[in-house]
Image 1: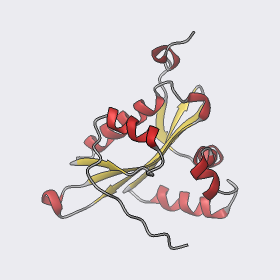
Image 2 (image 1 turned 90 degrees about the horizontal axis):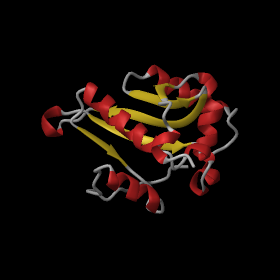
Image 3 (image 1 turned 180 degrees about the vertical axis):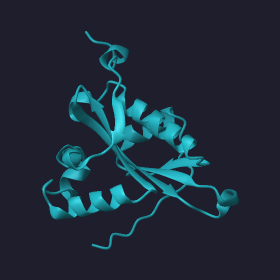
Length: 159
């Protein structure tokens, strides 16, 4: 049996997403009960428009994890300017997804470690993220990485 450490011996490559990665990214976003209810056809022009906007913004990075030539993970990093903490920049991690075939093999842990290192490289003072209240496995995962549930989050849907 392949162990957790052995499964990812060939380290994934983390890189900016390319337009041809969109179908794989959208498929990962849709591959859970929450995403299945809100995502659509990967060919929808709104995904392309969002990709182009993210790609053009120096304060946004859409990242993919590639393993053996396949996109197996994704996340978006957004760098937020603020006046608090002496004008510190923070990194917001969003839309973290690992493809179904790679789950349980340590890829998510490597992705978040990479994101934290990327935020440090940019000089961010903190990394933050939100997770839907129903994602209890994700909450345990983030706690295991040292994140604390320090704030209560609120959202208002406008659509």
